[in-house]
Length: 144
Length: 274
Image 1 (spheres, rainbow over the protein chains, first blue to last red):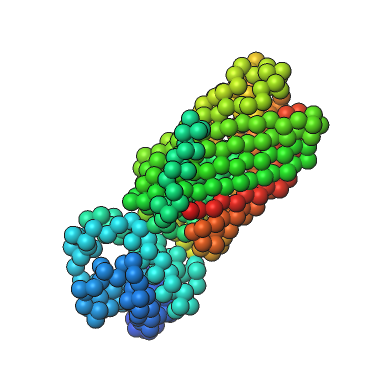
Image 2: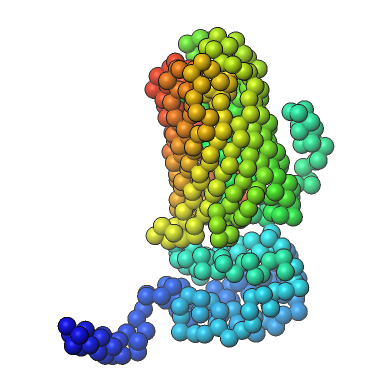
C-alpha cells in the first residue's frame, strides 16, 4: 500500500514536471481567465486611462508615478489571481495611510475598474471573481 | 411625526442630496411599508445611494393587483450618512367585494448597527422600527383587532457574496420582526387569537448583471384574528440601470387576505433616487 502511494506520488510529480508546471496549464487560475499577462496589463492600462480622465479621484494620484503604479498594480493583480508573480510592493496600509480615502471614492474606483474590465472584454462572472479577491483589501485602504 | 418628516424632505432641498457613493444596486429597492428592502421584506441596507459621508433622498410608489384586493403604497426615504434611514409610506388597500378602501400611514426608522453589504467579513446588521397608524378603522374593529396603531421592530442581516454562484453575485437577507399587525396593519393590531409576535422573513437573489437581480422573498405573518392569515411570498425581477431609478416587477402569492382566498398577482414598484 505504502509503495503504491509512493509510486503514485512520483508519477504525479513527473507528470506535473512534464506537462502542468512547465506549460502553465491555461484557464486554471483566475489569472488565466483574465487573459494572463496581456489581459491583466490591459485591465491596468484601461484603469490608468480612466483615472487620468476622472475628476473625482484623480487628485489621489496626481503625485504618483504612473510607471511605478502600473508595475505594482499589475504585479499585485497577478499575485492575487494566482498568477506566476509575487507581489513585492508595499502593504495596502502603508500605501494608503494619510490619504483618507472615502467610501464613496473607493467605490468610484471599483466602478472604474469594472469599466476597465468591460473594455477589456472580461466576462461578468470573471469580473466578480476578481472583485471578490480584492474586496478584503478595502479595510486597509479607506479612512486611514 | 409624519408632518415633521415631510417637512424635513421639503426643507432640505434636492440639490443637497448628491448621495451616490454606494455601488450600483447595493441599496436594494423599496418595500411596501416604506423601508429599504425588497418588495415585501425590509433588508439591512439603508435605502438610497448615500455613503458614510453623504445624504440621499428617494421616493417610491408600488402597486399590486391581486384577484380580489389591491394595494397601493407610496412613500419616501431619507438616508443620513448610511447610518440612519427615515421613511414614510402611505398605503391604500382596496377590497373589491366590500367596495371599500383602507388607508394606513407608516413612519419608519432604521439604523445600521454593523458592516457593509459587500465588504465586511460578517453580514451587515440593522435594527428598524415601523410605526403604523390605521386611518380607516371600521373593518379592523369589526374583526376584533385590539388596536388601530402598532409598532413593528425588526432586526435584519444581509450580505452580498461576490461571484459566489458560478461567478454570479449572491444576495441574501434574513429579518426577524416583532409585530402584532394583522395583514401588515391593514386589519389592525392584535386580536382574540393573539399569535406569536416574532415572525421570520427572508429574501435571496442572484445578480445576473450589475443591473439585474432575480430573487424570491418570504414573509411569515401572525394570525391574531383567526382569519387564516397566510404567510406571503414572491418572486421578483429588479432592474437598477443607474443610480437614479430602479424598477421592480414581482409575482406575489399572499394566500388568504381579509377572507379572500388565493390572492395572487403582479406587483410593480418604482423608486427614484435624488
